[in-house]
Length: 235
Figure (cartoon, rainbow, N blue to C red):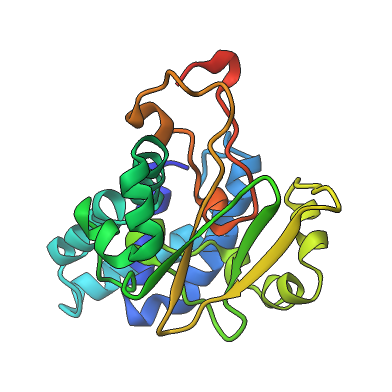
């Protein structure tokens, strides 16, 4: 996803008047994954740009303040933070135990917390247990370690079917689990949020913590995907 598209989305997300445009743009971003060659901005993108320009012109929004917020979501919040937590747990057994016992404190050790990242519980996947996170009431989500929630996480079909038919949902994400694997579904709330600690993939014993973090994706920390080693075992 190009930086301009991400900035447009974040700009709309932090502007009350741009809520509807941000929702449309999120759908457009998903579409762009399949059409990365598109050169002309989509209609939602143009609307967001127009909205931003209008609000700045009217003095309702400070462009510098928007840039600070965008930078926060780009560099201080997001899946890369959660990936660092996971990688640390993989290489440091003592840290892993602290993470499972007191997620808030252990995550704070790496410098993350707040911004809807309070009251966290970390769920460990094993060969026989696959954890899946959902928010059935709305879209409660640990922004501090995962950034903004994906559109599908907030959708009604996911929120309902993750509880009713979790195996079917996982199959749609490409995970066809064996019958002896237990699927545990965890419902996030405004007071409690979850982060999945995925299994470390085989063949990564010689990778550095930084290289391991690069393997971890947002979806693996929600529980709808497994961490896959890079082709050829390279970071």
